[in-house]
Length: 403
Image (tube, rainbow, N blue to C red; front, side, top):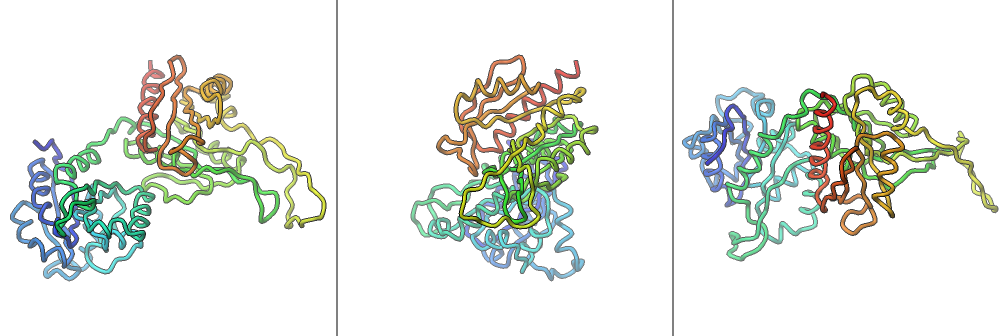
């Protein structure tokens, strides 16, 4: 039985695949749950199921062309401002490629490019198309943009073979919609600052010292915190990730710039989560010209960078401070020592040399240490799921601070 989605606005984009018939059931479930639904169809999709079918099943309106008769000339993009969620199902290889490349050449792809809210994609295609390098690259791009996917699953395809590429069943797509639209809003009263990525410490105009942080963990925390209602500021070193929508992004390069950016916001923040891999040292002398190679070895003098989180702890007030400890040995002992020395409320420890959670991976395996509690050892999970676990602990700390 569908749960309550009353007053939620769902835009369903249907592309041209045989799985289009499944959207009839999905639409029925959404309408029964109280959602308002509009449908955008490609011309190919309308060859499989007629627009009239979706109107008869309860869609408020169905659009099949940029030039729908009787429509406002800007309606093909105005729907993007209406929806709480854009569901693309079935999502063919073609529409996925358009989404990844930012192409807007018909009504559905144009709506998608204009829409800046959460998207849910349910891929459906031949197994060879699904396994094609280009499709895999496009799916990776969508994931990096924070777009949710459901399926595909293994099952009987239109070609009568059993393989991966079958669209997820309507009930599974509905559950994903429900999860997104009924997400927790337990952080809506709080302001959270997250740091992410590496810092870059130059020693001349073309060379620098840095580290291998991808920034994915910090970006995941920022996105989940935003989804749970928080006002989020993301202070980020140089990364190759699209920032989540609805988050205030502050780009920095050096540790000094990061500290300055945090201090500018610190007064108004309730929680600081330091996932950034801040360089411990920087070159003592910066050369304004490129340093030339010589025949002999060169020694470079280094000086300590500011210890950002220790600096913040000295004037924390009632703020929650969360640190990260990246260790390759003695993980728990090192994390506990860091938490005590830096006077943190919580620390998350991980080892990036373990298989499956290396630098740049979409997954992580961590232990969470909270002041006054035993460590929680978590299994390998996606960084988004780990972000949720971390924020669950932050909520507990915020409630404890209120007492």
